[in-house]
Length: 398
Ligand code: GLY
Image (cartoon, rainbow, N blue to C red; front, top):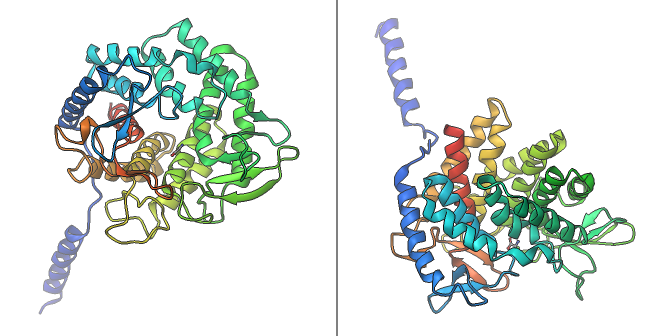
């Protein structure tokens, strides 16, 4: 064979090999998924509305025996249904969703005084926080500021953290990684009121979390018990994970999302670096299944009957879209990763067939496996972050 023939042959072989390599999935924003989401939420809202006047009127998941499981306004998930309705409105501009979102947002009015745990950030930012993106209102502003005041009552100055749950037999002052999600409320309140107190509490809490919550591999513990007098960490445990030293999947997503928000609000590079480290932990984890939807805990057995957690995937995708926007060319890598997650969440393996799943969008989430609660079910927060991710993708594309 002549030298030129060999070169031509090598060229064709390399073309064939490179075309056989797996290409990254590009998830294009597709209107049909929005139409399917609208159809599902039309079904869900139809069932829900008949119970609007009862105390438990917010759909959270489905019951073991079938049918929707409802919660009242004090449940930590109470803001997600209103939030999903807001995102449906933002995505479709259909006023029907705005009217419904407003109704379910206003029903949460008294939550602004809730001091029973740290979850008020989730409850109020997903409902009133989103309402304010559409309808500027002094009344809603004041709900945000009052809610931040309520959350501030849980700040422990000597430890520099916001206490997540009340003292129990096990923990005096527990702080969970999820608490990073409540800081957005504090940043928001400072922007509205001009009072930097809320901002400073958020920064203090984020700094302590940075200092104490992470391991050398950049995964995070779930629960830290603080000494309220001096800020010493007494013990590091889990509550919803496989083990104290395992990486509970949703916790990793809360950390990623929370530090991305902290970077957005402060432009402090340390928060961006932490978000990137968490993103890398998730993206390169050897136990992450091929479709990028994690098992409920990254240390759970890598086998087909281990439950996945679509909620952890949706939260991560939404955070990654925001994170990618803060980066130059490196951002493409995280956007592609988010696209891959969303591509799979939109597939029939995770996205419910029309008319099924009681109207919820996503299947296969886990609430708390160690407690045997909400295993392999739809969850209102999985839907919320999924819709938020779609909306963020839409904004990125525009
Ligand atoms: N914040 C509670 C949970 O993620 O289950």
